[in-house]
Image 1 (cartoon, rainbow, N blue to C red):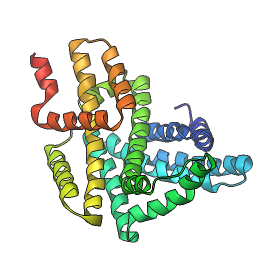
Image 2: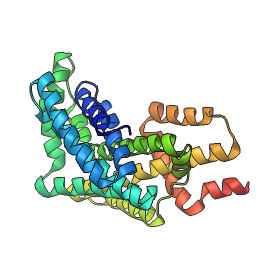
Image 3: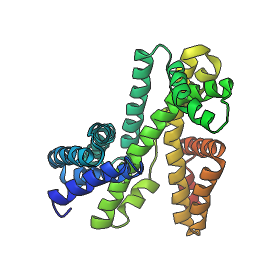
Length: 290
């Protein structure tokens, strides 16, 4: 916020360093999100273009090629900037999340349009990358396990991309809150509430994925994973809100995140289901009444 040079430097440096430590890319994108949220699209365009140039120069000097750094920048900066512009204009976290989900769903649709079988494409890619790496460790890859992983890859990559975009946006929003409205981001996140129509659509997609055979069933399942991922965030918002309302120990939040890390898919599905249930039951309102 001190000036364009500082903004460009932070964004470019973190983006180049992300080629060595991948999560640092989110810090660079969060810097651009902060600029967008505070100053709008025109300033974001100027800073983003300058940061793109700086990223290319630094990557060429450090790695001999600007292509990887620019690929990271374009795949993350553009959607994060779009999400930040929508959040700046509307102030609606729910609308921003729906847009992020729609962008991820578009990626899934495009993959199915341009690839006859995304799962088969992923299988070939995994065979080329994963199998040799395991072979060097003296481990053989079970073909069935490879098929199972490949069938999930499109949905998982779409969700991972969406999650990275949202985390970058929220980090930028939190920085803005710390600087100009302490506690504002927390209030926004705890009030997060997705529409009931998304709950219905997600459950319908789950049903289609379970009933429909072949590629169409996988396609529905990939879209359902995106919907469920969005409700995981609503589930987290409910947990944060209830802890705040009841003045409970922060250990409850710590335990929730540890549970997600340790139990993985079962805990994630349970939290997503709680988020979907909240669209009908409204646990936060009931918590206030209690």
